[in-house]
Structures are given as structure tokens and as C-alpha cells.
Length: 203
Image 1: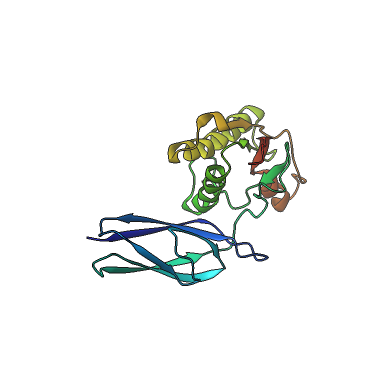
Image 2: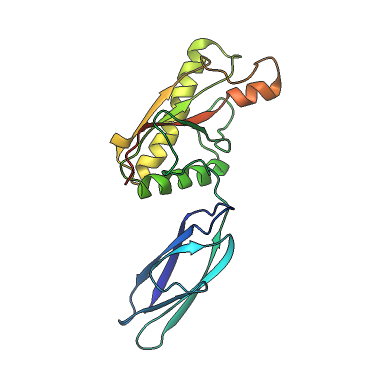
């Protein structure tokens, strides 16, 4: 029996066709033929543009399986190993937590999944995940919460398979604001999680 799963693991940037998806094929009779709708014929398609695509996998006995795949716009377009530099920080705007909690919301997971894909594709990069809060709560609470949130994000990546030596976490509490804490919008901006590039070796 021929079974096919499709895993998109790089989201498209608007300026280029860099969407990528990989097939996991089980069963079937060799040789296996692969036909992506953009003309690629290998198990990994690397030039998919933004939007809907399809792939058909056919084995030697004529058993055929078709699967759709959706290439979405990249959440963190700054994660480009060709232009990153050591010490650079990238804010994960869509990484959200429940109020006064280190529990990740479902809306946060696509951002972390994209970061995981990036780490897998660039095996020499080491990052720090830094948690930050606004200035409203007491110092001790801010330090504890920001550290716990950074650890939650790091733990998620490690659980998916990233080497723990490549992901460190740190809570900065309220020490490094990027906006005023006198407005709701400013406090929202200060309550954030960032990636810092600690080691970068281009492959």
C-alpha cells in the first residue's frame, strides 16, 4: 500500500520562489515516480511559490496518491542565513502566551515551527531565546515570568529535535524596554520574546 505525507518546511517570501516541501513515502513498489505541479520530480520540492500546490506519487504497479500542499508566507522573513549576523536579534511578534503564564498559545506554534525548520536547515547556528516583560509587575515576578516563557519556547524546539546545545534561553525581565511603559501599546511591545544569533557559520 502506498502512503504519502507532505511536510512544507519553508514558507515563501514574496520576492522569490523559495517555498519548500518534503514527501515521506511509505510502501508502494519501486520505482516510485513523483510529479509536483511545478515540474519538480524529487521527494523535496524546493522552488514552490506562494499558494496552493499538488503532488502526485505513483508506484510501479500504477498505484497513485495525490496530495495538496499550501505554501504560506514566512512569519519570520528575517531568518535568512545568508544575511544574518552574529548578535542580531529578531522579535517573534506572533509568539504569544496566556496572561501571566508561560504556557504557549496555539497561535504561537507556527512561529516556533518555522524557527525549528530554520534550525534544521542551518545546523551550525546557535541561538538565544530571550524573554522580556513590561514594567508593571514586580521585578522578581518579571524575571521569573520572562525566564519561564523563554524556556517554554526553547523546550518546544528541543522536543522537536533541535540539539539542546544550540538553543539557550534567558529571562531579561523589564530591563530592556523597546517602548514606553506608559501606554498599553508600549507595554505590549515590551512584553516580547526575541531570538538572538549567538553563533553563525555559513554552510
